[in-house]
Length: 280
Length: 296
Image 1 (cartoon, chains in turn orange, yellow):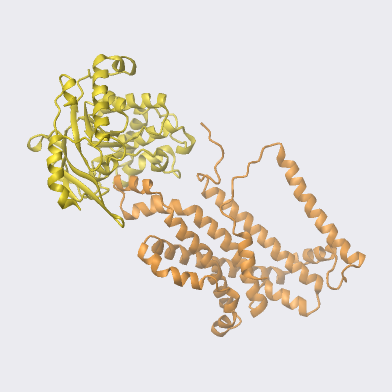
Image 2 (cartoon, one colour):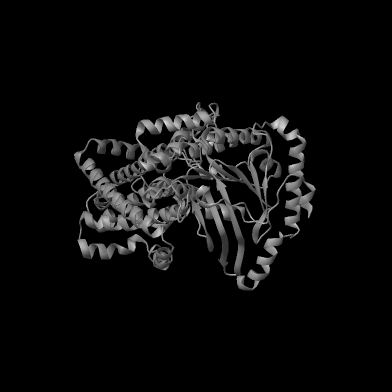
């Protein structure tokens, strides 16, 4: 799976406020659950009927059972911990770097023009193309994973911050100036809140990308984590175990996305993408 | 001249000036030329006028007459090409501390990420006004504009008229000596507008603040002001500086039906029409011809 495909898939703008009329809510959730059950049934049937050989695709029940067994193993949780550690450190590093650089470059017309071509050249380089370099530099360690994660998620946040900083309203800025707010106060009270929705979108995208890159790096380089466990299970012939680990990475992705959306909703309650109907 | 049809007014080619240090706000030979790729655009040619402390003056002119440009120069948001603005005798080089601006676009001027109270409080907080004093100023300001019941709402939860009142409250709490208003009621409905006009008169009289109110609405300028400064079309000079000799107590029904109100309104309207047709006051014609060659 290439990073590009995933990025464009999830590159939705700030989520629109979900209008959830009380009546429609249950049927929508029911439909979602029905969809999952349908998918699992299909998965169960295909190997059982013999459309695909069970040694390539074990039935859903077998994989879920393997996953539940995994939940009881320390080794599984150690691998999860290693992946999440690389994910978290990489994400935080890229966010800090992107926010600092984004605010500095974004607030200067000169720097924006000066860096634009370089950014447009570096940004499309797929992170996975850096795997050989990462191995050369750091070997089979968490640093290799970090390098890929930081490179991939940095651009997600950086570009959003650039857009956000450029989106500052002229009237808001003049208001701040006319009331005597200095440069720092304007960044804090005007530029930052304006850029925040963009930043949150960037962070949400970066969180998904960081997970993909963490798993990829572990899988390809063999640095510790879930990705390496998947490769080991595959080479050891533990096909159900391999699928169980894949399922586990999917679950982690879902949880990350839910948490990010929750944070977004909390920090941007005032924003038109989140706020509910006019009260007064 | 047309203006002589209205008795009791004193048309002057330039704005009224005051001797020495009596002026709160002085605009002296202000000129603003925008440099663009397509050549220079002279938005304001030459403006001179004074406001005395506690005066409420309206600035009215045809659209495109550089009203907003003038206001930005006065508020220190933009540097004039020539001439200067003095506040209490001190030249304005950046946004002065004792000046507040109310913009037309209240929706963009208020910060949507702050509640009403935080919006009003922010300039004071930034100045380091102590908590207790700040609270009192904010409470009083919200009370003065009739919004003490919604401090915890967000601006976007309020109607347009209420939002502009929040912006006015923010200006009031800032305790300015000069309050500049840039077509503040252009985007609200007629009934709200009438209420807000009365609010401005009330606030002005209560605080004794000097107000410069920019509008394109002739009725509004006559109803609100003690004085109406009429601008010519661009490149802008002062068409006329008119004293509004209506009684100090004004209300929407009676003041607007006074014969004198109709006369003044008629006069201002006539002047604006003249300005639109390119008529320029006699004094400006001279400067035009002398400045014409140098302006390009």
